[in-house]
Every structure is written in structure tokens, then in C-alpha cells.
Image (cartoon, rainbow, N blue to C red; front, side, top):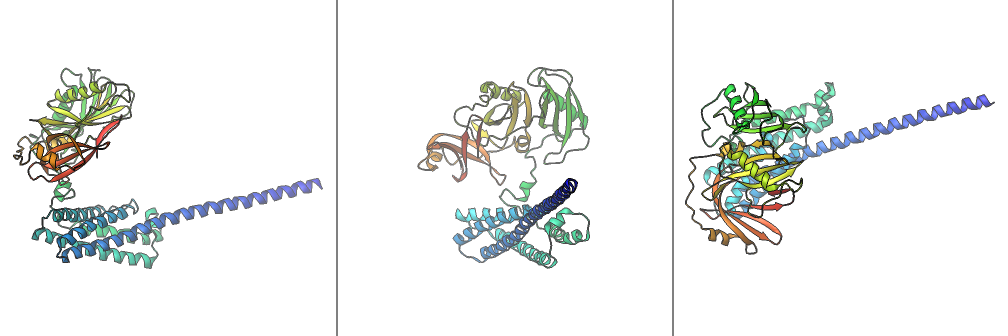
Amino acid sequence: MTRQRAAWIAAAALALTAVLAALWGFQQRDQASRAANQLEAGYQRAFFALVEHVENLETLLAKALASGSPMHQAVILTRVQTEAQAAQEALAALPVGLELQRSHQFLAQAGDYAYVLAEGLAAGQAPGDEAWTTLAELKSQAAGLMEDLARIRRRALEDGFRWTEAAAGDGTASAQTASSVPGSLQELDRELQEVPALIYDGPFSEQNLRPQPRSDLGPPVDADEAARRAAEFLSGPGGGRWRATVENDLVPGPVPAYAVTLEPQDDGPAPTAGLRRVLAYVSRAGGRVLWFLAETGQEGPGEPAGTGGAGDQGRPGAPGEAAGADPGRLRDRAADFLSQRGFDGFVETGWVWESGRVTFSLVPERGGIRFYPELVKVTLDGEGRVLGYDASAYWLNRDPGRRLPEPALSGDDARGLAGPLLQVQGVRQAVIPLPSGRHVLAWEVLGTLGEDRFLLYYNAVTGREEMILRLVETDRARITF
């Protein structure tokens, strides 16, 4: 009897275990199914939102072309930018495997172009015939995009298309059928490649997507010369010796460059003592060292962090406070590092302290004018070793032949243009980069509004307010945004 009872109990336990296992498996499948459905729902919402925002974009472009009221046109064109941004966000939410670069660029350019026209209308500047022709071309392209997306949406609904199956790409018949929708989107993207280049005064203008150096960097150098220049730059006056190896294939970009790897032959003096390995880019044109990143004996690759923005009037920052280092010494070390390599007259404009390292942003000051486009960054550790350097912006924007206009406004005029509640603390001249890529001479006005600090930039010729930046200072950074 006891044995029978034990056998019965064992059988019951096994049955219960089997039931629990089945229930657990069902629960896991149910959770996986719910997760897959939630993911699918997210993809579907993003795709249908994309279609809706492109339809709205086309309608607004058509209304802007039909309107005869500058005020109404400005309002409509501002809404065009909003719809274009929303369409980009929806497009970005589709599966990562979709490469739709031209579609993103088209939406960015359409919204940006509309906003540039809206700004002009708000300032009383009516667009010319060429601008309206360009806007009509964008409307036509948006209409074509809208029709193609509507067709793809109908196909997706008819075929019961699921994005998650297409993203899986498992090669099954269902996945191959599902891939017809992403394939149609990618074909649509290829068709957009033939959209005429947009040349206008905005950040997504075609010429700003492919920047070129503003001045000649010098005659081309070969790989061996690039390696020699990288070692010489890193050593500085009386520095250590470096063994350099270089990739013969050029790294593409606005300034094609050689990738050079350097390893120390001896410790050398500060600021490079203790560095283990350095990767540098040296331009083919002129053999200019564009940037480098270093490794130390204990740490991983040094990584330049942050940017200082346009202005720095006010108390000196304290990047070393977080690590107990002398901030003035680190700032001076960064300036000395540049000066020893021919970058004279640079002043610090901002800094960020992160992971035991501080990155200073420095710009040249000539004749009392700061040239913010010619930015250079230098990263140091708390001991003052230089771990990173980035002069890419400097070599792109350096222009020895730059001719500045004669200011039509004085500094006092610029003070008077600021808001009535702003307490102005200082004014100086600066060359600033605009989102369009143009550089303009401006008056930089530093002021406070309560506890907040701002930098306002007024065009020194037209008096136009070109830019407003908020200046934020903490014990770990001084940045503008």
C-alpha cells in the first residue's frame, strides 16, 4: 500500500511538473508573441506616420505656392519644416536594416529650405523667382514620394505585410514576400538620388553636406612624408622619437588623409611622456596633422569630448577642480602645446571635464577679433599629458586671405540691440559660422538675465541678430548651446 501510494505521488508530481512546464512554455511563447506584436505595432505606426507626414508636407508646399500673403506663406513654410522633421523621425523608426539615406536627406533639405524662406519672409525679404521655382520642384518631388508611399501602403495592407518578418530576413518564402515592401522603399530611395542638388543658404544645402577647405593646404605629400610629419608634430621641440606606420589607402572625407599609427621609441618629455600608441590623420594636401588620439600605459584610447561653443567671456573655468588638478596649468599646457606647433594667439573658449580628462576648445584671436570657425580642441589628463588633438575644423575653415567688411555698427549700437531686460557685461567682435556655412563678422554681446547668461551675435554690417547662445558653467564644464 505504501509503495502504491509512493508511486501515485511520484506520478502525480511528474504530471504536475509536466503541466507546470507546459504552462511556463505557453507563458514564454505568449510573452514572446506579445513582444513581437508590440515591435510590429511600432514599425507599423512609424510607417503609417511617415505616409501621413509626407502627405501633409506635399499639401503645405502646394498651399505655400498658391498663397499670395507673405505672412501666410511664412506660417505655412514653418509648418513644412515641422512636418518634414516628423517624417524624418518616422523614417528613422523603421527597421535598422533599411538604408534610406537619400530619403532622409530629401526630407531634411525640404524642411530646411522652407524654413530659410520663412525666415526671409518674416524679415520682409520676399523670395525671388528662383526660390519659388525650387520650392515647386520640392513640391513635385514630395508629390511623387507621397504617391509611391501610398502605393506601398496599399500593397502592405493587401499582402498582410509584417516588418518583423522582413527584418528577420531568414530566407523563407514568407520573409521573401515580406521583403517586397522594404525593397520598394529602397527602390524609391534610389529614384530620389536624381533629385537636383539644392544650393541655398541653409545647413542642409548640398554645398554644406560636402564641405571643402577654404584655402589651399599645400602640395600633396606621399605616405612616407605623412608619417614623418606625424612623428615630428607629436614630438614637438626636443620631443621623443616615434616609429610611424602608415596606411597607403587614403581615408576619404572633406580633407582626404593618411591614417598613421605611431609608437614611442623612448619616453620623451611631457606632454607626450607615457603615451603608448597614437593614431593620427595627416592630410594628403599639405601634410597637415588633422587630429590624433593617444593611449596611455594604463588607460584606453583618449577621446576628445565636447566643444566649447562660440563664446567664453566671464570667469575662468575650473576643469581641474574635479580631479584636484590646477586648471590654469592645464589651460596653459593646452595653449603651449598649440603654440609650439605654430598655432599662435589661441585663446580658450570652453571646456568639458569627463572621465579624468579635460578637453579645451581654443580659437585664434587676431586684432581683437575672435575667429570661431577656426576651432582647435586639445584633450589632456590631470597630469597634463596631451591625449587628443583635433584641428579638422581649423584646416577646413582657415582662410589667410579672408577680407572682413567694415562694420556699419559700433559696439554701443550692438549693446542697444539686446533685449531691454538683458544686463550687458561685455561686447567684442568675432567671426562666427552660421548654420548655412557662411562666416560673418559680428558683435558678440555677453549679458545676464537673472541667473542665466547669454551670448548674442549681431551682424556687424546689417545689425541682424544672427545667433543666441546660452552660456552654462558648472564645476565640470563651460559650454554654450
